Length: 172
Image (cartoon, rainbow, N blue to C red; front, side, top):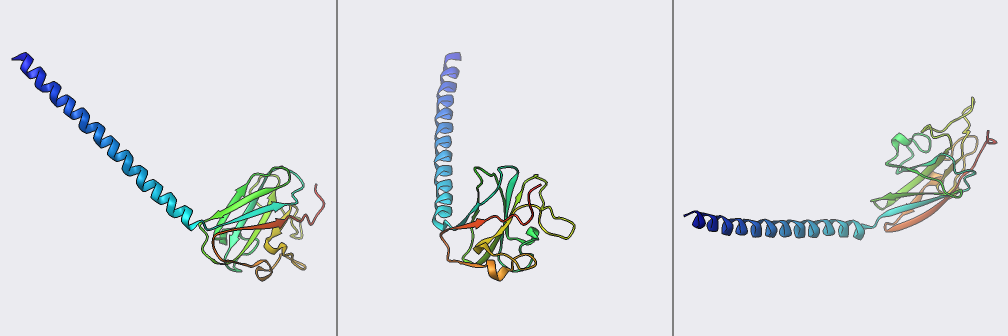
């Protein structure tokens, strides 16, 4: 009787193992199909704006980039930007990539956060002590650049823009 029970258990165990393996294979195949479908959709949209920031006078700190879709907050209040990115600096350049951007009108502001304190340092009259820049290399007259001067139209797909960083005050 013992051999009979053991044989029955072995057949059930073997069947259980085959079922578990089949479920694992099915689950991994399903996961692969769904994740490749999601990445295919993301790749198909491919809407991104790549910002190349040049003219940085050191590799210290990082570059903070902000993408705006209106004049509200541009360029100083990145909390009102629709997207923000921090980027490392290498050889006097940084790259900020804004993914999943819908076609439309935008402006980008950037600043070189040399001391890494997360904010644009200013002097006592409000002039930036760190490097700043905007799309279209827009500069302000007696103040920051206007959104309209920095605005560009984005059709969709992959776009690349270059921003030159300007240091308004001599470095410390």
